[in-house]
Length: 411
Image 1: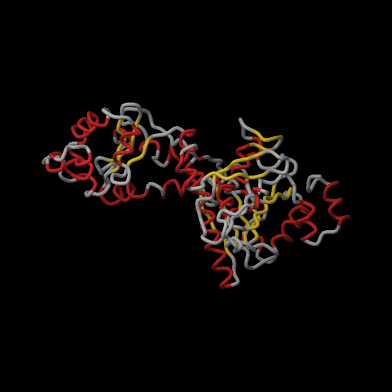
Image 2 (image 1 turned 60 degrees about the vertical axis):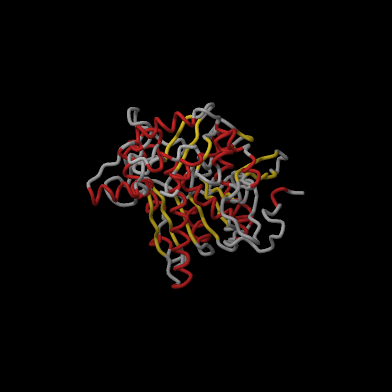
């Protein structure tokens, strides 16, 4: 059986929810491709527009692991279920081809530097005459307006400037970044969300629009409740020991006999339940620990007491004893996390069959539909869909050969 056609649910029969939607994606690297990977997974036709003279999406070359030339594991992660068209948008003829594709598209999305969409003709103002319903979504580092419009920018820079690194790590340690590029990933999702919202409006009104988001804006927005605390109470949230919650206690890491666990008593009801499970019922009524406020004021004393108990048994023993009653999780490395039985139960890893015969495992999309199979196709080779897409757009064989000769597309 072709794994790429295997349904997530054996009883699936409906087409994916975004089937019939066409997205032109002038994208590369991480944030943009991550957002459009959700659209592609859910059935949208996502056409990657890749520069024929620059080797396409730089993500194709991000190591250290590769399936083949121009085909990194990184690239496959972000670009499954998409199509690829090489097209030089800086050449007038390349832009003309793109504009013809726009007439049959629902949206254009890019994750370029803020000053480039206008220069390349990717804005609603530039494209509305070809399709008044087109939605033009822009994901940049710092936005398409303001003093930083031409600045390049990346995830870790946003974590630094938006205050995230000062909220991460131990209080006496250096500022620390997240282990993953969370700002990239979340900004990709925000862009996809905005794109879908604008398409809904365009289908209702017949008028498209520009949709903007940026790594910087999303990183600031993600400050969330600590930002509200500062803006309304002047409170500056500090790092708590053991990756602890700033106000809810106990909600942090604890060492066990052979590792670590994270315990989260984030509702008052869990504290007496934990005390009972640990055989320390008296702690529940101890005046130092009765409420969140009491426990926050006495965090260090409570941590020492809990340490003395949790270190008497292994992580596995605590998981068996507390799971399902107390919110608790083991601290695992990537290998152990991905090989866990619950991952298999949730079907969070699926096989994608490649055209070269190699076997490829990727993470499942976390959105599930009770009666819909989501596609499982490998990411496209550079320019894999050139001929089909250009023929669909009405270009003749002779015209396509001329495009190749002039390096507007690749061979």
